[in-house]
Amino acid sequence: MLSYRHAFHAGNHADVLKHLVQVLVLEYLVQKTGKPLRYIDTHAGAGSYDLGDAFASKNREFESGIARLWPRNDLPPALARYVNLVRGCNPGGDLSRYPGSPAIAAKILQRDQRLQLFELHADDAARLRRWSGRDRRIQVAREDGFAALKAVLPPPEKRALVVIDPPYEIKTDYAGAVAALRLALRKFATGVYLLWYPLLQRPEVVTLVRKLESMPVDSLLVELPVRAAAGAGMYGSGMFVVNPPWVLRAQLQDCLPYLHAALASTDAPSWRLCGGE
Image 1 (cartoon, one colour):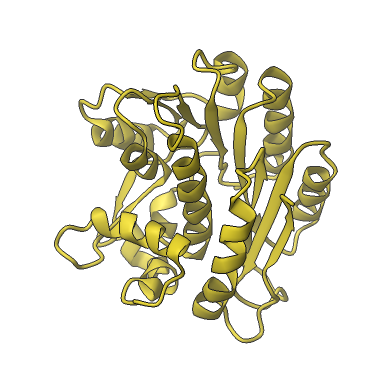
Image 2 (image 1 turned 180 degrees about the horizontal axis):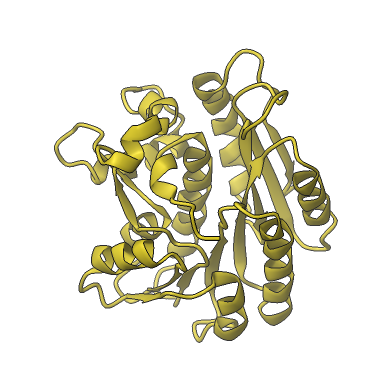
């Protein structure tokens, strides 16, 4: 099944959490000037998104995500760096485009650091290739990102950030994400990994989180609910970080109360931050 299009959800609350973590991790890794680094994305999407197109404007999910942070001038420093990166993709000053994970990585990575992007959806893979243009750092493949990890790890650089971000449109994605992470760690234990997951009232989510938390690895788990858990639909999202930078926990502790106040309804559960100590 390949019906999922991330353009419908670009810039929503889940993107805010995911991309905040991505920015902070990449900034830390890139600070080690002169050291090789590779960015690998298993489900890269289209690269960047026009918030005025038919997909993004249908439900306008960005209005309850990045748009709530856009006019603020009191952002915590770490959160401000993420928002300023998004602003840099909107030179006119108005919020009209939202960078996906590949575009964020391309902004932060240096010119000799490579991006390896996988996307199975035919139309999004074509859009991803068009977005990448003539940037020689970027390699795009229309492949199953789960399966691709086996072939690309360990990377030649011996340093990498791997983003595992499936759509979870089918139940097997939950087990597939955990299996892909376990396989990746067996092949490349020193890599840094970001695994995103939705918060839903489904047993698959409970099982996924339990399996993640039981992994014998240095890790950090963060969750940001934005509405009450009761009822159908996604009420928040989470990120599982393997081999997190030592500064990440403190950065998120500074940002999460602000994010919860800005994005969550009054009946939403509190945010959660575990590990990384």
